[in-house]
Length: 581
Image (cartoon, rainbow, N blue to C red):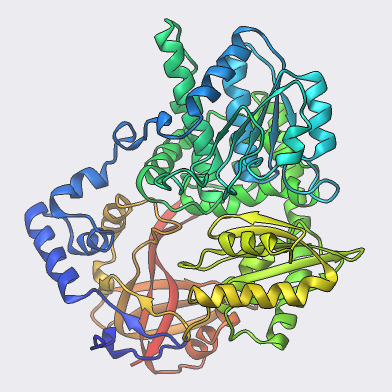
């Protein structure tokens, strides 16, 4: 029997059914509130995350030392750390081959900074997205091998059999997290929690976290030998940035890494991140939002439409003036990227809608679409349709595309299957994101087959997903103190969304901001009033429904936040949905 809809909202302004805490969840939350004396809204959030009353305080104050796994649980880790230390002691020539995104750049920066502290320089090599594509290639690896004794491939390399074989006479260590095939490349070590022969327990780590564990093991081996390694805790700002930007789930050790990394970032000690925060006009304490939407896109901009190594160089530099110059250039490139993305997004959405967005997959392909923005546009299509999405840029008969998935659908495995079946020239990725190269005349067949594979996983079944709510609040209860207490259950992000609350039977005053956003003031008639903002409200039925509401009253749903402007802070609702009373 289906439980009654929360506040009886069976179909909201955005077409969703509202679902609140179950009777069992409510009972557990009330019991937790009684035994811990924590606020009931916070207890509801903890219960939703499977936290028991006895574990609440530990969850709210996670200790990284308790959650960090033993690096040696990953295959080849000991061999990789030993080889890295040998290169340091023997003063060998070291090269780092990295992916061009935030995770790759942060992974490279971690190694560069650690090696610099030990007096060893490293050569950074990041391939050009357009000319070379993702991952190691034969010419680059052969050239690096001629001039180096050790090559570290970070955030790439697990599927690069031929390029790694081309690094003749040089040891190659792969530090990656992308899905592996049945056979591994001929590297000295392949450290990857998503190898076929791993148990998957650490499969949620991004590449920077894998690199961090390598450095933990290297420092441990140094201590055993009577030496002291570089300070690793000071590097957690880079791990946090990569974890959030790569949309890794903020669960378990990832949550602890990001939580601690945000504290490190708040000290403003890394020149590159300080300069980047300043050009992004980030005037509040670092947050998951800032990492994902202010800093991450700027670090990515170099790899998307500019010079591929700009982001990694920014994150690794210890020179303040160089940091300002790099951050300024990345900010300019990010502005250009947004303009390019806007044009491609408009064309891709129109094409996808003409094809139909009710199936298990939405996709679009266009001549001349910049390869650097197809991933972002795929994410926008996914958000707009609630379906896995693929966007492909075409040039000279070849399509280079990116794909983004929805929760519960393993996109990476399906892309691997297509590559194995010969429908793609190449393809790889992980559960939520993947990349592919495909012949233009094979695109319809490849997309039809991908849709079939995703449908088997349940993609596209039913209408809009239910809106999950953590409970009901009155405007007077939405205080800064409550938000501060709820933030202790964070940080919130992928697979750990911020709690979402409903406000029942509110009188609403709405006004449009610009062309696409909405700001409202609302209250329940008992004195307290709150403000809410809905960005992109007119991309959905939400904006028109509230703007035309007149004197009607609404149930409102969204996430609470502190809005700081002009040195003043106040509670604000990030509005996500509404329903007429």
